[in-house]
Length: 561
Ligand code: ADP
Ligand code: MG
Image 1 (spheres, rainbow, N blue to C red):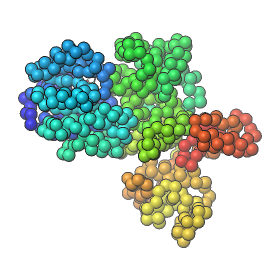
Image 2: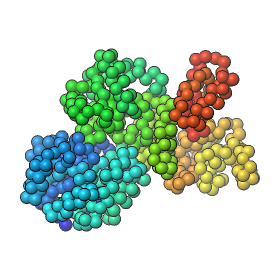
Image 3: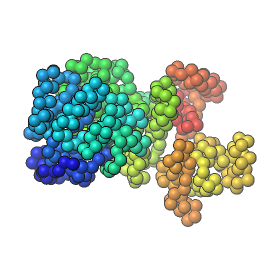
Image 4: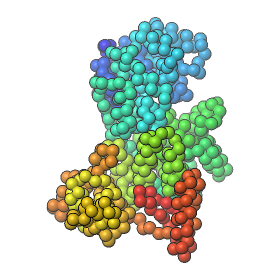
């Protein structure tokens, strides 16, 4: 085990010029200096880099930093060199002689940090692992560690090779860092890296200086223009789903006099680098990009992040919005939502990957669209998603600002909670709604018709019960188990309602109206059939034009007609 030779606090001040550590940086650094493994979950901009850079300077040998971002390595290393730190990177962009020079420096123990792409450690480069064994490595830092997991939003097969590290370097501590990992991904990282004894360091994911807004996509361009007009000098990123989408929107913005550029993986490397550089220097205000842009980019004054299309999951959304406001100043995250996007992404999820993976992708998409549909605090929903408690209202998301119209729903809540209790907390959301409705399904009826709660909710449609149950979940009157088929469970708060007659206030469900000419997406044959049927149905019911119209599907996704 390596021993520390310098004081972290001193290094923080003298080398990096910062007065004090943030959050749990110090605890993480001490843990590493004790030679132990750790996984660090910290939001983007939280300060993950220092967690390995400071130990790198305290420890005698070299720290190997694995990062997927070849394009950014040079910037990261240059930034370290400015602080007088002996750092280098090795990747395929360098000439043979440059690489030989760096290996020589490593042999002479002249480097404190070495940045590598994971493929360096792969297959026929196995000699490189042996090379590393011959020099003094004191720490492995795995940045963007979620890339090792298929459950993460950015799986990179090259990362799997990192599972071998523990075999070769038994006594060298490994630090895995990521800004986004739900429990599934987190466990997968730990498993893949073969951590046995490790500590998990978790920071609050809350980014109090980011305000979250979700707007209907219907008037996307008009609304966006208005927003940009009011933020003429600000720097921001607009994310689009497709490469074409970025080109078209950038062109439209440029034509309208905005200082914008497109960025996606299909552009020439030199163009990408140039535009990224211009954006960092504030020569370009608005980067219209696919998700290829941004990971690891350390631009502190990004004032807004716009999602022109729906992200595939909350992890991606949160990481992208997290690029705003790294300097701590107030910033905005705006997402333009349409149920059409949900359908589009659903059909993508079906073709990509295997069945199990599709299932998880669909579940994640479902949670993403739910974020857009709730009328309660967005921040609370996001933080709950990452397993964090949060107050009911944050005061700085669109739903809190347009304070949700809460109506007393005590009786409704009592009906739901007593049904959950009567069912011994053993059933899921839809089943509970079926019991409330007094379902005609023979199996359900035969099994439960003797219950006093059977059919006590006949007065409301099933969609409304589903809505209210989700509201009770959101406000903590119910929780779900972690099982594959989650069941509804009571909480301390539900007891107050059931036994102390506490009042409950919830939002009302959206009205269901059927109107004219639905948009038809033809990506999937079944969806097309469904839309044909809906179109017929609507034409037979709706007589008025220009009525706002939505169809709510039973899984509560919303189709905006
Ligand atoms: P992450 O990798 O978690 O997204 P970074 O490591 O890039 O975040 O850090 C984000 C910003 O915060 C950087 O500009 C960094 O210099 C700054 N920072 C990190 N730790 C501290 C600290 N203790 N004091 C002041 N600034 C810090
Ligand atoms: Mg980072």
